[in-house]
Image (cartoon, rainbow, N blue to C red; front, top):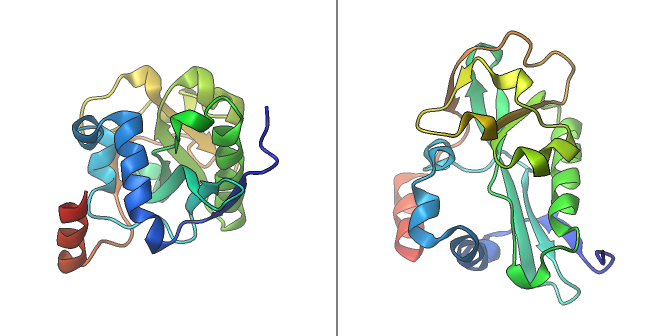
Length: 184
């Protein structure tokens, strides 16, 4: 597992086209836009300070992970993690794990209390995510419930949480969103 030459940096505006192409390759251009989690991200900016790029030794973006502000039912505010993607030529080297650990640590440092995601439990459980804390929360669309997971950054942050998940945080100004949609 070689990750020594990989650095995690904040995402910058110049990363946008490379990031979008990476996500299209990883999840399929049309398919990724139909996901329930995308409904919570659509039109919103990532949570401040929580959009990351994994870069190789030449500074090229080879991985991405973002966290988004959401209201987690009665627990309110929380973060939604995703998507996490690593370029196929660089997979199986621990880069996704490095992005995950970095993002979780930064979210905790910034004072966030909980992180939710939709993903493979066998992968995300190694970072502490489980189904237990989100059983009474609901997403705004179809999802395989066993893939809806939560992580408390602050013990008890999701205790007794129930109700719908909703987007929150900063939204794109209409003109910027239109530009982004044209380039995607």
